[in-house]
Amino acid sequence: MLNGVINVYKEEGFTSNDAVAKLRGILRMRKIGHAGTLDPAAVGVLPVLLGSACRISEYMTEHTKSYRASLRLGVTTDTQDMTGQILSERPYGHLTEEEIISCLKSFTGGYEQVPPMYSAKKVDGVRLYDLARQGKEVERSSVFVGITSMEIEEISLPYVTFSVECSKGTYIRTLCHDAGQRLGTGGAMEKLIRTRVGDFRIEEALTLSEIEKARDAGALGKYIIPTGDALGDLPSLRADERTEKLIRNGNPVAARALSYASLTDGEKVRLYLPDGSFAGLYRYEASERRLKPLKMLFDL
Image 1 (tube, helix red, strand yellow):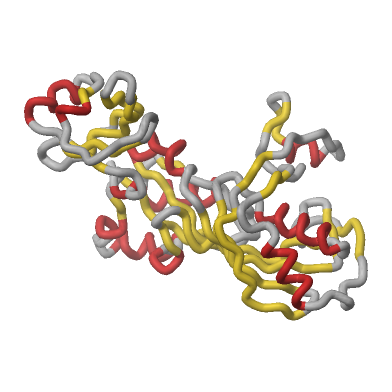
Image 2 (tube, rainbow, N blue to C red; image 1 turned 60 degrees about the vertical axis):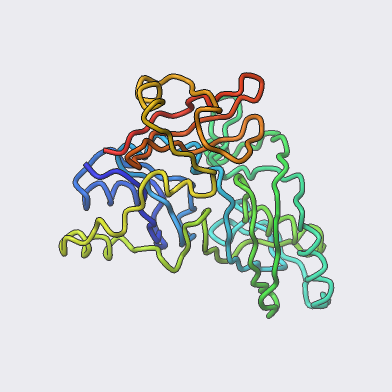
């Protein structure tokens, strides 16, 4: 069985779950998941977890993400993108480039974002999109989302193309909608490309057909990223022979038994065995001066 993460380029017209289902057929294995949903109309980077790597899915979704989006001004829709039903249309020709740039730049740093009704968020155990399809709208609590950077690439009214780097949980559709509200014209997302998830970049992403060709050529292995490397933004430590038994038995490890520069309380680290195999994720507990296992995950 394959174990690790593969950088898939999700194409337009099917969901992230559809991509996973197709990949199960291509790779002839069942244990596959993804780290971060893309809408059917969106394209781009979709990290797919294979085999034992599925156990780190909750940590993979913590990565920052980058997108290139096209905002259409002068229109609002029920889905906040142009796949939905148009709710209103307003003039936009009076807007200057300076006003548009200033508005989009004002989101830098982050803001309180209300999740859209057409989303997988749950309210009282029911997904919002199920309620939306029934014509219902419910109150949603806002969530702070971080916007690390915002760059406007092109303005050709009614379209504005921009690139954004953001935290997990950010809805770019809603960002487009909120920008239109601030400008007083309304706005909806026209197109969306996810260009990066953590260290996974669009330049290295493979379409499903490319993965199928790599399988047939016996070259698939070179595209599968080891599970530990997929969490490369976390610090790594290597155990010695004295602590290996503790680790294999799932026990906490005294920090003094490992060589490390400095760790902060609650910090997550990747722990490797003496032979270089990935043992799993650990969290540093400053009060106990030890590393406690979060996910035990030996590469097979």
